[in-house]
Length: 435
Image (cartoon, rainbow, N blue to C red; front, side, top):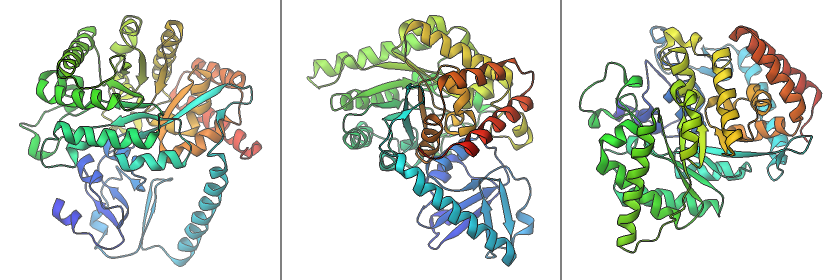
């Protein structure tokens, strides 16, 4: 299967039963124009990888491959979640106009590249980029990012048939640091689990990988692997504004153990005269209800926090975000999710600790006004989303956004919240121009 994907040598749209995150990461972007799968969901890791790589994708369509023979014309509409097989001339003409309209909007948004994401009432918002590979840095910089808010380092593993060495890690991080020219870079330690691991590196299949040995749990279990990555991150910290982020921390013990390993690696580097930043900022992901409930305790032991809404939604609503059968239950607009978000940002603000949101929520302009109203002042988004999010930030006031957030928090259901936010965005875009 992997060999079949690697053999693609002409422009195609890939239609598959399923694609793993590693298979998606290895798609040749010169030839793969997009893909659609029967399995998965919009919040799945495969969808996130596709978004980061700017590959149009529709996931979780359900059975459709029986209707495909291969080689026929296909239109893939990632915005609407549609795959149109053998479209007629009228449909093709319609989508050609859509493509031209999108290009026109992109040209207008490009004018914002060197302008700050500053609201109408003068509040500065930091817009940072999410990356999986060093090659994505240029896409972020070309759209005017303020830094890298999330560097997902697990793809060093997913794109290789061997475990990365310290030098592999270091080379990747240095490439990003040098390209960013002093701008901040948040490097997340490995967020690996059975749902992301390559078949060759997985010893046994987990029944429920979302609740299994993954992220910081795996790093603390596999200390040689963890120490290798921390050594490379620390060495890179001597060359630029590097910060480290621990994923899926759910107990204070995990955080303290991770910091102890980091401190031990620091001492080892110091003994060997290897340069690093001893004051490198240390942060944690807030991705579980437990982390939100105890955030007033965690916040005393970190320099910053990053709210990972993708997993926070999954764990709060007990929904597998990669399962198409329950994909409709995976909803960022659920009132429970909004209240957890509000608490996270309130606790961080009261403690004077910087807070960032880096999930898919932050990259969707439907949520920008809500997040600003909840008090967020730093968003980490895919490179492709930076221009649109910046446009919204520059078209609203924080006072207006607070009113939107307060109204959303009073609502009873996700459907009501979503309809309200969509209407607020529609009104904004119909009344504002790129400015």
